[in-house]
Every structure is written in C-alpha cells, then in structure tokens.
Length: 204
Length: 204
Image (cartoon, rainbow over all chains, first blue to last red; front, side, top):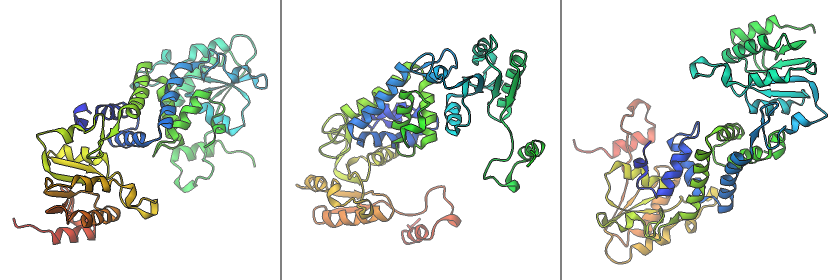
C-alpha cells in the first residue's frame, strides 16, 4: 500500500491508515474503517488507546524466571508463595498462560518459550527461551514439567525437543492430553484426533 | 469483558487488550493477538501508531464547506481551482470520497452527510450535514447534485429526502446508476439488481 492510495485523505488520516495496516490481520479496508472510527471516537478514548500502547512498550518486560510478560521482575506468579514451586508448565506464548489460568486447574509455575521450533519461519532452538528453562531446573525443586505446546506439528516437535533436554533433570515430564474436544462430535472429529482419543481411553 | 478476565496478565497488557476490544470488529481474541503483537513490535513502530492516533484527534477537523475530514479549512478539494465548482457529489462517509477519487472520473466537489437517515439507529435528518449542504446551494454556482449514497434501503431513503430538498435549488439532480457490477455474473445477480439493470439498459 502506498501513501498515494490515500492522497485525497488528509495526511494524518492517511498515516493512521498506514500504521494500522501494519498490524496482523488488518487489511486496507479494516485499517480505513478503524481510522474513521478513531476520528469519530471521543478524544479521551482515543488518547486512552494511544497511551495504553505506549504504556505497554514502556512498562512491560520479560520475567527473568518464567519469561512471561510482566511489570515487575520476577513476575507476580513466580513470586506468589501460594503457587506450587515444584511444577513448571511450558508454553509457547504469553496468551497461553492466560488460557490456562482461566481454567483454574493448575497452581504451579510457568515457562514461556516465545515460539516453537519452525525451520520454515527461520525459528531455531536458539530463538526460544529453552536455555532459561534449563537454568531453572538446577537444584531439586522442580518435580514435574508439563509440556503444553500446541497439539500441532511444530508444537509436538518442540515438545519432543524440550522433553529430551529436561527428562534427565526432572523426575516427571508430562504432556497435555490429546483427545476429543468437549462438546465436539465423534462424527466430525478428524482421524488423528480420534486415533489419539482411542489410544488414550480411560477406565470409567 | 471484565478486567478480571485478564488478571494474570500484567496491568498494562490487560488495559491495552481492553482498549483494543472497544474498536469495531475487534473481539477478545483479536484484541489479545494485537496486544501481544504490539508488545513484540519495535518500540518506534508502536510509538508511530500511538502518535498517529493522537495526531488524528489533534489535527483533523471537518471542512466547513464539504464536511469532509481535513487538516485545513476549507479542505484541499474545496480550495482546488482545478475542480469543477458547479457540481457537488453527496456521500455518506469520508471513505466514500476516497473511493470516488480513486476512480478519477469525477472532478467536482463533494459533500459528506456523515451518515444516513436510519430511524432504527436513532439517526434523523438533524444528525446529518444536510443544512450545511443547503447553505452551499445559495447563489447560482451549483448546476448539478450527484446523489451517491449507498444503493441500499437507508441510502435510497436519504437520497430521496435530499432530492426533495435540493431539486428546487439546483437545475439537475442525478443518482449513481444501479445495474450489474462489472465482473459480475447475470446468473448470480439478485432480482432487484437485475430489474434495475434491465430498466436502465442503454443503446449500444
């Protein structure tokens, strides 16, 4: 997209369209729609959005322990005495921490890899926060690593790689269960999921 | 969405998710995705976006003549001596000006109504910039009004309303042609469009 395309628009309008267009999933039309929405928005709301963007850049750092996004280092989860210090759940993204926290079923610590091994996208082992995970396994505190990368090709490959590295250091390495999604339909389940569900069947 | 939902996220992260969630078409998931994208974005790019939002609020005003968004009043189109001062094209939104300018087929002036008559959404005649249009028709300069509101129910109703008001003041009031979209398929055209295309058929 060139600026030219929006030349009849006033310069600040064209610039905002261009900036919004850089965001993932925001095409030209969406960028235009959002821009005109922002133009009509009450001034204080638009300012709140702009300030929230700046605040995130100024105040958010990575926790030196779990590598999650945080304002304080170590982060509130890592310093929470109520959390089980003997378990670390390994995840791809900070969003995955939110997803798991919402389940309220896990009270241990986290470790965010910030990606998965993906040769196609040029993401190798060094780009991930794996070294930082191994540092945390020194000493005998951690008793279980839960590998919770996504159940797709890259997530599985990353889980297998991390498993090989951590299994000599931790008594127990587990992986999230694969199976039929709750509310799903056997008839529409793909073959691999159904196979996994069958193989992982439990006593009732 | 409550802040609670993102409590495990650092406060600036949760706040940015909430602010983005207010934008049209941005659901919770999209707001999260955009937020984490912004967190990872280079600082200067994120700042450029924040500043573009503020610039739009600080520097954009409505042109006192055509009511389009502009930095200077009157706007560059209204003050352009190369434009045909005898024609005014009446549109719903500033985006429509961009769309028409891209066609390069019209060299007259514009008038942005900023909406359409829509009783369901509580938008009446007073909310639109119709009075401002009538002011521009004093004197004998304007020879043609092109009504270019959208070809849907509300757009048609608005066009008819404006037509009734301006027809005593202007020699010629026209409406954009309705018909088959270029590249379209007769077989898949809806009945109303096909009827309009048939009624509006031209000599070859």
